[in-house]
Image (tube, rainbow, N blue to C red; front, side, top):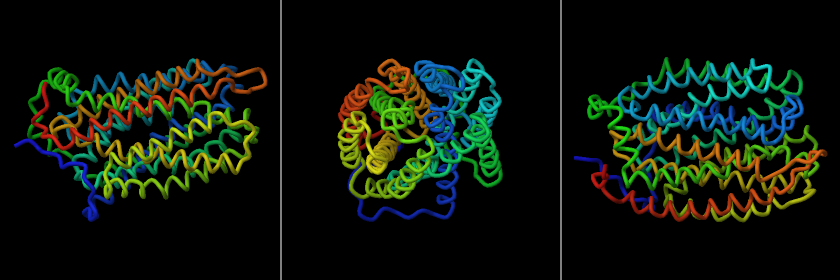
Amino acid sequence: MPEIPPSDAPNPAPPRFTSYQKFVVALLAFLQFTIVLDFMVLSPLGAILMPALGIEPRQFGLVVSVYAIAAAISGILAAGFADRYDRKKFLLFFYTGFLLGTVFCGLAPTYPLLLAARIVTGLFGGVVGAASFAIVADVFPLALRGRVMGLIMTAFGASQVLGIPIGIFLATHLGWHAPFLMIAAICLGVGAVIVGRMRPVDAHLEHTRHQHPVRHLWKTATSARYGVGFLATMLLATGGFMLMPFASAFTVNNQHIPLDRLPLLYAITGVCSIVLGPLIGRLSDRFGKYATFCVASSVVIAVVLYYTSMENAPLWKLIVISVVMFACVTGRMASAGALTSAIPAPADRGAYMSISSSLQQLSGGISAFLAGLLVRQTASGYIEHYPRIGIAVSVATIMTILLMYRVHRLVAEPVSAVAG
């Protein structure tokens, strides 16, 4: 019999984690930390990279977007095979490629070579996230996934508290290559733990061992049921990819916050995200994932519109705005990720997550590139037209709320309703 996912109903007493589940959560959160840091470290390095390499905002936006576009392509190509292997081995293969790509970024001496290295990193990094979330759906029931996603999303906060300040410090004292080499060293440790302690994740192979990769990819990609989740996930990427690439340049040049104060801003925001992320995930398990998503999204719209229109704001105000904004963004991602993970059947999870991740990365890459077209940097460094990004993010967020309502309704329907 096909699995029938439970509805997204309030649950006052969700089950507890086993000791192995706690280990898996911690491992995947740390793994996600390296993936997130690899992307997020580019934002604060923007103020250093652009003058160091002599590039414009449009070229810097391309550095961000090529990673996402490469990840999108590799995710689609890998989707047909994602359910044919032990998910642990599948994860290790692509995580190794991601590690090597990050090393290449740390060794790249010029803009074209950095661009090429980001492509290599993206080809492997995008699939790592998809494999991780497929493991989450295999190991944890839906009633626990809000908390799991909230804990994994602390990777965003941890990257700000630990990774980004250290990355800025290393970039300032040793050059912009140093943060990438630091990330590669962390990846090596995470990979060793996966090899040594993670159990195989292969229960799905009973149903997928003989699936033809192309037919499996086509069936999953063209399912009407899955299509709603794909579209909602694409729009989720818009906010972060449009706001983050120019956030440091906006803070330094528009708000006149010194570059050496950025680590304080990121650290305080990150600490609050680490605390609030799991709390919001727990609330989504208790009060409903869609309800939590709607509340967090509504706050994001209000805060983003205000943030992108600010001028000469003091540091304390930027910290407050950043804390609220990142907490709600984390809440959106955790509740939406938990909800969409219940859409696919177990035999389709790997393919679904790979396609979903690819579309999210593609959407993010396009968003980052469009952000570079929406704004312009003057000779003094001032970022013009930044409020346009706030409007674009708000429109995408409203559309996502509407799509996630349909996902919310689909979760209560039998997976056997999937139409190929």
